[in-house]
Length: 331
Length: 292
Image 1 (cartoon, rainbow over the protein chains, first blue to last red):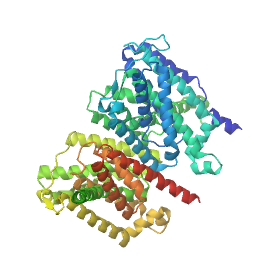
Image 2: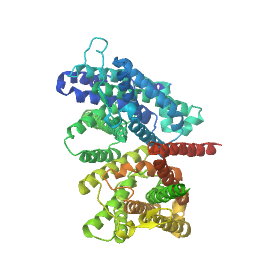
Image 3: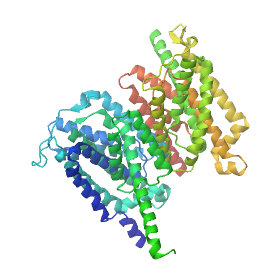
Image 4: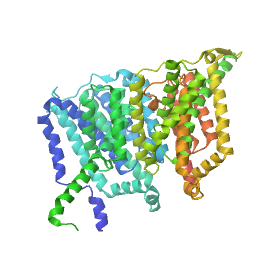
């Protein structure tokens, strides 16, 4: 029983986590001039969180997650253009649309594993991009969609050019969906997902519905990714093909890996680092930026097991060990 | 009737020659994946490098095409051994995700490097005159380049088939693909084999990039642009099989050319849709059979 409860409680709340959320709220006051980029950071945190659910916890290696981000973004924009000016409902519906797409594709895609899975997710991403590109009557093609706006949030908060509402709106979504994800990965279902990640064949042998579990995780992840995309479109009041591109899919994987996969906070740490470095490197040639991403990836795989979070915990352990040594004595 | 013949001969000739380029680039990856089980997403970078090196040898040093291409192939193959020793050796026992991440990282670095050295635009490269004249087939005219590619593909296929099926090296290679542990136990030097195959695979990719630059234009994003299609060939052709790789590459070349020609609006999708269903069918089919 001890073992079981340890598995279920691995992702329970720890006081240090409060620091992270307090920092995010404080950002409103400290970085009030940079709230637009701060909102992007929060959205990417949410997107990386959705990827963590499938990649980190269920072990589904996907290079096409932008499809769901993009479906969410386009759905939210189209709903707003169609007359739905209430942002929260719009984002929820966009998330559900992305989830519906995942529910259709998941049962086929998730039968695969290894290289074929990576391939098919990439190809599906490419199809969505091409489809949005060709269906310009619906998506605006290369020009994208713009010219939609939203009613005050909850009827009270005006969307201002300073971006307070936009930032806090994104942050609220992140917090709510983070709690949901934490609940899921801490549940017996979440433990089953991790079992599948560790050993698919063995989970099948003990009678777990492997594909069913994976599809459920995939759909939930698509829902979260769809909402992230929706918020992105809503606060920028603009959506373009870029949200569906392979770059977006690769970016989110890199963010997650930088932060540390399978650790809930991995994406939430990796996304800010990634977005901020990219933002401040924006004056550069974009190709130089690609060099940095590439180098970071190589370093992360070769030396930084567990990403930034893994590095932090290793460093803390090391410090603690050396701190205690003089008083406790060597064992 | 005349027109139907003309269109179908166009699709077949262009499709097959495109397929040959795909085959040349993919076959190295097919063999590498079969032997080393490494998901190498940086494979396209070696193809791009081959194309760039060949083109700049022609442009800068005015070395003729037929000498520049072999030089580029040898250069890239030697260079790839360094890359293998530095990075890939650590991947042979790593997880899928680590392999994807590190090789994507290498591809990113390659894109940045190509841009840094050769500039962000499509790299100007011209075919020699002997390949640009038109041949009249009675039905319609074709560029000699297309025929050159097809002949080249046939020669390459025969050479590879001979090497893999008829030489001691090929036998050792096939043994290691089938059962690495057993191959090592009977005294085959598997790590050395890995290095040789890696150089061979990258060299073939470079050959594909160098002879195919008129079909797949050289630009910094090359390593990513053609990645999906190359990986599709690999995942459809199974591990280490030259014959099926050739068949799949030519099939994809013809279907893709045909769809783009006949349905210009939606051509690109048809090929992806067909391939996704084929991959799912093929791989889940394997699972079902093994389970039974």
